Image (tube, rainbow over all chains, first blue to last red; front, side, top):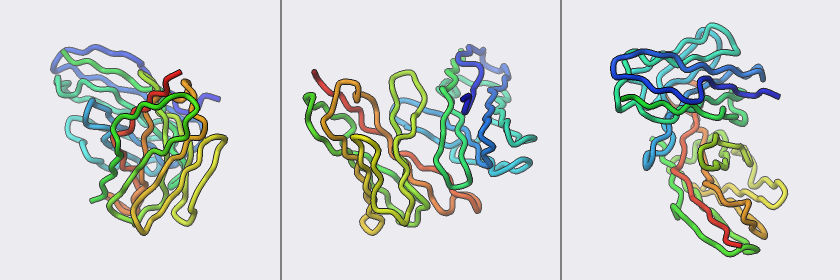
Amino acid sequence: NAGVTQTPKFQVLKTGQSMTLQCAQDMNHEYMSWYRQDPGMGLRLIHYSVGAGITDQGEVPNGYNVSRSTTEDFPLRLLSAAPSQTSVYFCASSRVIGELFFGEGSRLTVL
Amino acid sequence: KQEVTQIPAALSVPEGENLVLNCSFTDSAIYNLQWFRQDPGKGLTSLLLIQSSQREQTSGRLNASLDKSSGRSTLYIAASQPGDSATYLCAARVTNYGGSQGNLIFGKGTKLSVKP
């Protein structure tokens, strides 16, 4: 059972570069979300989606972009990477108000 | 704005002890509350989900309770084992956060260490 799959697991970027973190789920979940986890800050919601074609901002959306063209995929785009975006990123999915399932995370370092 | 707090931030117990982890939330208008486990360098694994209409859920040695009126949830771990060592996070699914659908608001977790 694949569940929630994130790629890449590790990435190093230079300031100003752009990249996309991929997230895919095979559970036909309507709800998908992206969190970042930083020491002392806990998990903070970046963007979320309640279905294909619908996205909305979370607590810390600046510098990130998302789209939801299919139910399965929810990529997170960093438009111009900054050192403050060094973090571990988690994608999660669920039924609309059901149990939330997480991917293994993507560790991003911005130099 | 919903805030979720977990106290203590860290807890160390000897093997075999029963223990309780605490989670409090400021807004009782929640859909559900979920407990997770996170091992170092890993993702979050769901342990228990309690719907707002439920008082508790059990899975093996774990029992989670929910008291919406007091804004509290507890995770009870029976007969703790070294393999239980991990960070435990709770998250409340709010009824309204920037839209019509609920998002999870996380506590910062309790780091549990079970000594052999």
